Length: 237
Image 1 (tube, rainbow, N blue to C red):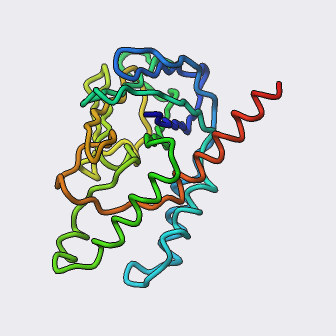
Image 2 (cartoon, rainbow, N blue to C red; image 1 turned 60 degrees about the vertical axis):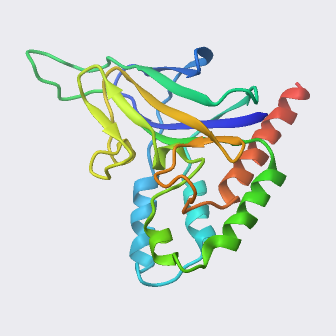
Image 3 (cartoon, rainbow, N blue to C red; image 1 turned 30 degrees about the vertical axis):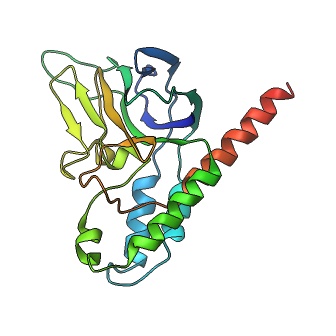
């Protein structure tokens, strides 16, 4: 089955761009320098919640459109995975030793955020069927418990991704106070997550194996369209 991996970094470069190497399983699929890109998503999210009270209903698509408008530059990878596989590891190695370290102190360094890390089947029809299944089960007797569950599939930043730094700095997405989504990261290390086979596709491991909370096709559909536009442009070069 074909999957689409989409990665995007915000990066505040001090003197030298950090180097990223992406591995799917034990296969290196890309190596590149991360360019400077000012992060705008934090401010956009803050403004969104200021304009939408937490108890006031709003369309989920409005929140997703806000995120899309503030995406960093994206890198797309079409990955074909054998159906016989049951587990898959994703790792992004970061080489970033750019700082003015001196006598045990650092006042300037290159910092980055992994803002986008999506992994999902490259199949709009399949994604649409998953949304239909979710809607059928969304309102039921377990509604309150259902909504308290933090399962979010395809967006790896919101579920299972971890940062493991060589300086012993670690972040994960299970604790909001330690998630790298809200923190700029410096130094060498790697992002890591493990994907499992569920419903016949690879997804992040769910905290409750038979229910997921947040999923719509707005962002995956946008990313597929964006990827196909780039693919078509390459074909005409």
